[in-house]
Image (cartoon, rainbow, N blue to C red; front, side):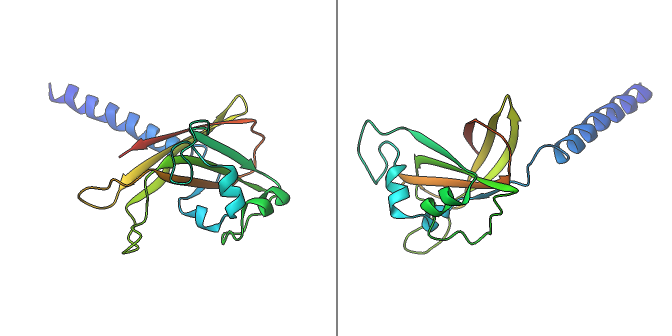
Length: 170
């Protein structure tokens, strides 16, 4: 009986190890997420990418989410006033995801209320799939009026034609 238990434990450890190493070696495309990058964008670009029921508009005709792929300098120049991380468009691109969400920084204290991380990223049939996690950083109520949120992913340049983005809460 002890031998069976040891074999079972070894088998589970092997599976977990393989899963862990496969995940660490997985496709991350050198991706980094910036969840406050909307501060670096031009007001015209933000207005062009307004989502439904955000604090910017109450239009029912606006889309729920908007995703843009910026892979060339001229598109970047139209979108950003500044972007402190340097982007080499020969090797990198930006994925910009607008959606209606919550205020992520307390406007009075400057404390972060939420943070986002990339949980997974992969490409299938020229479609980029990104899953983010959203974590609450404060205790107590975190509600806010709906506002325009934006996540920017800086990553290795790829040849994608579509995106699928999902946010899950931790």
